[in-house]
Length: 323
Ligand SMILES: NC(=O)c1ccc[n+]([C@@H]2O[C@H](COP(=O)([O-])OP(=O)(O)OC[C@H]3O[C@@H](n4cnc5c(N)ncnc54)[C@H](OP(=O)(O)O)[C@@H]3O)[C@@H](O)[C@H]2O)c1
Ligand SMILES: *[C@@H]1O[C@H](CO)[C@@H](O)[C@H](O)[C@H]1NC(C)=O
Ligand SMILES: *[C@@H]1O[C@H](CO)[C@@H](O)[C@H](O)[C@H]1NC(C)=O
Ligand SMILES: *[C@@H]1O[C@H](CO)[C@@H](O)[C@H](O)[C@H]1NC(C)=O
Image (tube, rainbow, N blue to C red; front, side, top):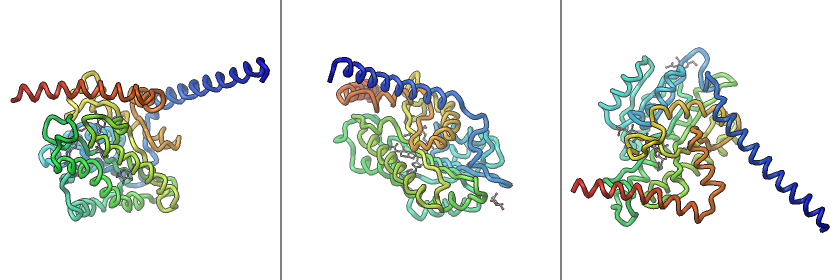
């Protein structure tokens, strides 16, 4: 190649790279900072109330999402395992269209889950938020895999993967049936985590978050293929750190209280762009985008290890004090 041709070729590649970054930056700004003041209209129902089922809704991110859905005119069904906490959460929403379902997501039998679903089959449910999840093991939550009991290994799968799979399976017919008009849609939203990339000392948590992630991707590709279910949108939300009762060490991170409005506000933009994955909060989007696309494996491992090691050390210090 003559030198001038080489220069032209290199300039072309450079320009394409710059355009890609500019396009990404424009998308980022438009998606995160131009949000509708009337979100989720496609999931409302003409002439009747539309309901959302939110799991793990007695506290944290789940309750925050439920509160925002009520504010947007939806009825909500709150699912949780502690009756008193659940009742208090329902009362705090201050709406006549709130129901509760007492179900332990870790231990529920198939009969119990199908009974719970039947008990709400009179409602027109257009949204399922699979939020319940976490670290079902004795403190400290950050430790190496070989210190977990077999029961603790299983508990992660039960709480974070098995329950949502069973519930989604049983809820799909209700979500499909609540559509009465052509432009009405339904939604399944799962909570995954930045931990899905594979974090040390939370191996089971990371792995079950990865299960969610693939499950969502696969299901959304499947649903859109069948005309009977093509109106059910499927999204997986990927979050970074949120301060909540299960993540008390996330100092400086966004609080669960305000996080729900980012989730609710971020759905329409993601669905209209045909995304299967959504990062509803811009801070997490930047951080996860960096992790997924830009950092080479060696740096990713370094940062994941340093961050988790620091948290693990703090937990170990707390445990030492308790002893
Ligand atoms: N916080 C973060 O930094 C973060 C980051 C990435 C992903 N996430 C994900 O986001 C979701 C919500 O997290 P969060 O921080 O809001 O958690 P959280 O504050 O611990 O809240 C979890 C909710 O689930 C309920 N729950 C716990 N165990 C249950 C069980 N066995 N059966 C039924 N309900 C149960 C809790 O009820 P009780 O209060 O009654 O126990 C609570 O309402 C989880 O899937 C989590 O993995 C969180
Ligand atoms: C569900 O919607 C139908 C009409 O589409 C309505 O007749 C019925 O009352 C609704 N159910 C509830 C519990 O609101
Ligand atoms: C998988 O999804 C469920 C429901 O969305 C979520 O609560 C759970 O935490 C997820 N798995 C993990 C490991 O977090
Ligand atoms: C959510 O996860 C459950 C179980 O992992 C799966 O059945 C469902 O298809 C997923 N849905 C979405 C939208 O990701």
